[in-house]
Image (cartoon, rainbow, N blue to C red; front, side, top):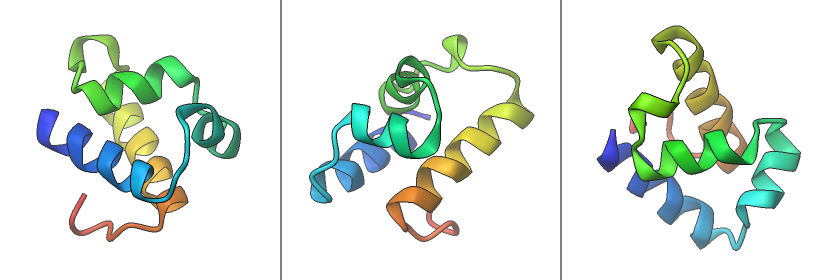
Length: 68
């Protein structure tokens, strides 16, 4: 999860997006986005919901879903 989080953060920063920008675009609470980027699995919802959050995050950044 930490590897995924670092990849996501790097991609977001490459696009000069703040967490606030991404939260506004995805409608995902900023704390959940931080948990994804920091790899804090304990603070994330059940796996099925977590997958949805990560897919929304990746879709907004237009990254390869296969890579994620």
